[in-house]
Length: 378
Image (cartoon, rainbow, N blue to C red; front, side):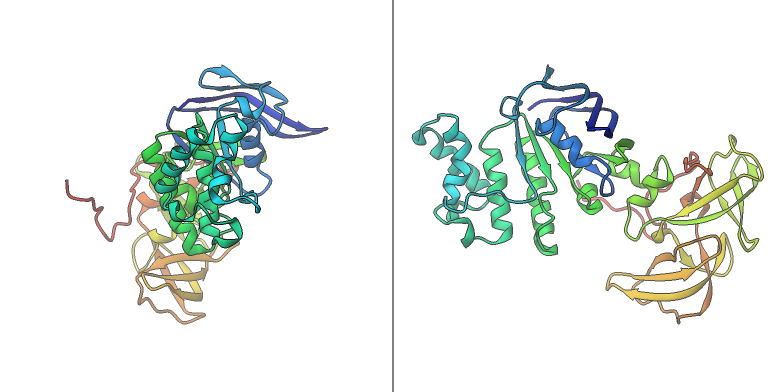
């Protein structure tokens, strides 16, 4: 196990810079996930840590040792790729043992080690098979097993589940989380899938255009995003945004007048803002409800999706360039074109300045008010 330290990491491809002074400290045994849109630099950053890309500037340390100039084999890392990268002519056992064999170990020394890892991954019955005889999920387990037998200081994962179907992705997420608990090894994981990020990470690093936008736990990023980009990137459906004008500020929060002159309240510290500023109200879909009175705004139904455990309604609303979504009880009904009021608790609202910076929430709530938080009995 090892800590990873990135100080001012930069990466240039010719005259094009893709990473701009990345500063990040990853603790020993931590599971950190890099997320962001395509082209944000997350895979480039991972490959720079692996030694597959030369670092243009800054310093990278693994377990306290500068590794900028070290080749991948000497960095104490193992990497699992999006493609399984298995040798088709080798058996599962031979694929998993290949790195150990290359390192000069004898088969008698590594056989037990490979068998133990295969048992942990529940593929011990597949050791004699060739990759073509395996399912996608089984091949990915073999690729992960090949990394585990190396006993690295740091595991690197580059979108390892993107080639699997939905059911297998869920199963493999559970397997990877279990492996991290058992191995207690530092893991760095790249994905474009926010569900993977939210369910696997101790901390999430959100990147955009080669820069870090925010680092924090999944709960911190979901309920306390630093800016509009982070707020809109995490969550499915994503956060709703309504543009308006700041027309009131008091110790309890802010009043925003929307495009059709409706007013809504948001419980934020708006002391640094000025009356008349253009602002954006953010509300998560699960915090909207159908209502007549209270803190609400008008909407007109576009469509409804019945998902079994809930229904998602989509609306046209003032100040929003995209349809507003509301996650409602499973039997919710609305006709296309029907006018309605969408209400939310001011404590569940977010407010962003014209340049996208989030104002501090005064009384943040971390769950839907319709149901109390639950915990497993001790």
